[in-house]
Amino acid sequence: MLTIIENINTIVNDFIWGVPAMVCIIGVGLYLSIRTHFIQIRKFGYAIRITIGRMFRKKEASDGAITPFQAACTALAATVGTGNIAGVAGAIALGGPGAVFWMWVSAALGMCTKFCEVTLAVHFREKNEHGDWVGGPMYYIKNGLGKHWQWLAFLFSTFGVLTVFGTGNATQVNTITTAIDSALQNYNLVAVAQLPMVNLVIGIIIALLVGSILLGGVKRIGKVTEKLVPFMAVFYVILALGVIFLNIGRIPTVFISIVEGAFNPSAVTGGILGSMFVSMKKGVSRGIFSNEAGLGTGSIAHATADTKKPVKQGFFGIFEVFADTIVICTLTALVILCSGIDVGYGAAAGAELTINGFVSTYGSWVSIFTAVALCCFAFSTILGWGLYGARCIEFILGAKVIKPFMVVYSAVAIIGATMDLGLLWSIADTFNGLMAIPNLIAVFLLSGTVLKLVKEYFETEPQ
Image (tube, rainbow, N blue to C red; front, side, top):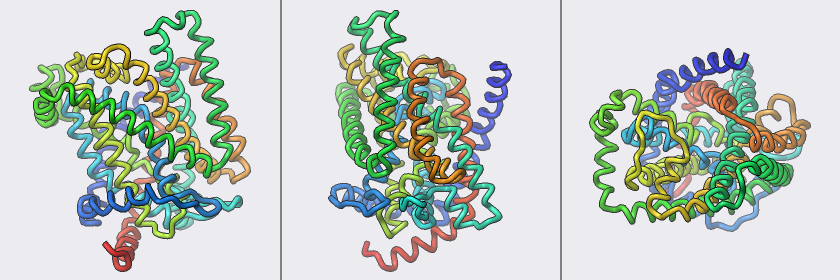
């Protein structure tokens, strides 16, 4: 039975993350970019200026909301995860250095897509029975497209609930236990026979931490992510820049291999990868998986922001994709490519490839720091997706199910820490891709609303 499920899921997954996904996500991103006159490029400086400026503004949010910066950190908590470490490594291994180039392309268009998603989420949000702001694709479908499109909103929410337990929780916890196990074994602190018990303890601790944060509501989530996300991002960036600085002589060659490999992979990988399409597919799909532009999930967090200007919050979407993919994913790629390690093109790879890049430069002692980075990345993702799942199931069943959902979601951490999750990861990846379909339809149909809001914003806002 499991074999049948796996075979069916493989077929669906290859379709969802294959040509259809690339055509839809890249196509909608290009369409939105043209309609907004490439706002992500024209107003990039403005976006960075106002987002960074709001980061340092100390302000208490009103009831039922969090500050714009906390909303951005919550969205980044979900996107800046293991995909930045394991996903980039996998893309390079299977798509060659050229996959990085296509990751940049998807990010350039994804900045506009996410800008539109966030703008629509804030514009069409509403308050639930607890007085909290709720929004996201299901709400801009419901309030923007009307009753005839309600089924599309329920479809997105259903896919969201099915995704969060795997993509957002169990697989992330599994990454945490793997990182901790690796660090403990490197220093001979734990015997192999003791690992199952260690993992169970880790799972219970994570479940308790996640539960205590999520059950505290959106304000507590915002307070945790605004501290955790900047810390983990700066920590990882410093580690990665150190690798690049110590291997600075290889950087020009690395960038040449990225550009050349984008159009002629075999010239860089020695013929092991001969398809430009494979390089493009891996780069685009991993970029989307990392920054979530096109999936619509990040807009759920932004809808909780204490702001009256949807477009102003939308610029955080541009900043997020830039920080996630252009900065952090690129740094991961450079760590792998400039450290001189054997990538093993053509074979599947994950976080271990990135870790090898750090270890080859710094020595084995750095494994403890990479373990800390992985744990922070994964834990933040669990929190972000916990909020997404709660909002999706609330849309389907009402606010009364939020706390029971949070309890079940937290308990899943124990499963993630103690079981093999190969098939679960694959199924969650499929549902993750399916979320993009209803969202992209809605963003495409509501693009006129975005243009109207942008025009009104710049008519009154000084630039």
